[in-house]
Image (cartoon, one colour):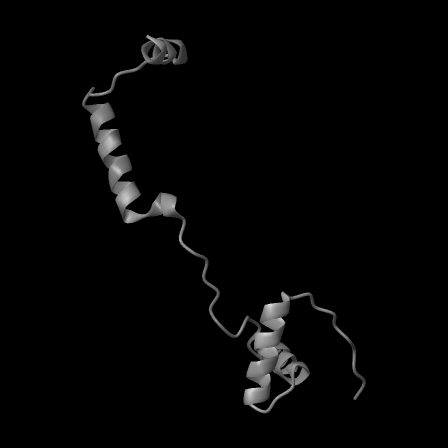
Length: 92
């Protein structure tokens, strides 16, 4: 079977750790990457879950703070000032 090459850039530390892992399980990095490619093609998806770190804006704590702020606005408990008024307050 003919072979094709793929060049991939990774951080040196990640490469070293991956190479060590592959050696521990008795597999070359090339074989491990081929296993990944074949599993991806067979499943027609990435063969593991990809999860992003949650956005802190949508944290439970922040959402509660936003809801409380909205309630205060609805209840008229908000003071509105222009930038000039705020600067005057700060500068005395």
